Length: 406
Image 1 (tube, rainbow, N blue to C red):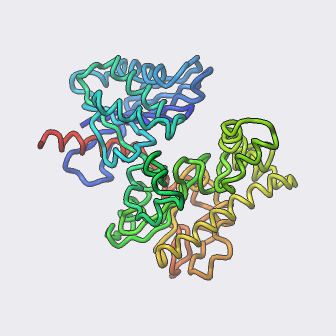
Image 2 (cartoon, rainbow, N blue to C red):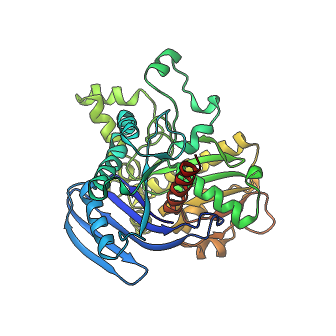
């Protein structure tokens, strides 16, 4: 079946049309079309391409994710994907599923209301997906079913010792406060691909998966299930990121609000959009720019990179302890997949736990699936480029098959 996988970010929309064979093993999917709408909310950069050679590349105003979805569907229609033998379903990545959504869910009015009800837990993330869902409904009507795939679902297996905060539990229950975790599709993809390429039974895999991009998170995986993860109630917790601070003292927001004479909400905005690599370096959230600035002697850029690598290394150490050792550390995301220097600095000095990189393998592994550790080490390291669309398409197809079988 042909599935349109839609993945909405805060200012981007990515899509793939993927053909999924109902009884085929993972890895047999066929990509028929793909594209991105970047810088939504202004003059967007639009790039679409299909397997048959059809292409679209332009810059145009795109107001929101609903309009971006309309543009995608119009283009897919011009390429013949909306013909009777075309799309069977649409799968939408939804960042926050709250406590209710723990598996792929067929989207109906009730599901829409429930997704909207938890949007206050992730307003910058769920609303774009809701706009895309509404736009797809408006264009296609009820003829093509849609399925929501939730980023938080992978982390619902965390034990309470990892998922709870040490706050009054009546308040936690009243306000649905817990460590939800995010980037679930990415961590799941890295886990499944590691098991496939190493012929390791999923039930035996003990991994630390690292999604390192503009947003960053680490997950301890045991038996294919999330044991702990660095992001928590919101995507602000955990690792240092492009513009997010990661872990800070909880009193910092109120302290800065008092000293600066602003609201706590404004300080939260600073922690989300003005901190991380950007805040420390004072120049960029882009790791490539910071590495170049460091080479030219920029000390603030050097500090930003050093802090970033140190904090990832610290989480690796913590999760090695939580897991009682691991088979591998897996790097994914824009930085994890494409920055050998950063990977080397993260893993530097970790010979104590049996993690040693092969310098040549690491240097050559840019955007490709590869083992980058030395031979005969206790903890291996892999680069596995993340493809969330495959998870979305596969889960969408599986959800529809379950519905058909009753």
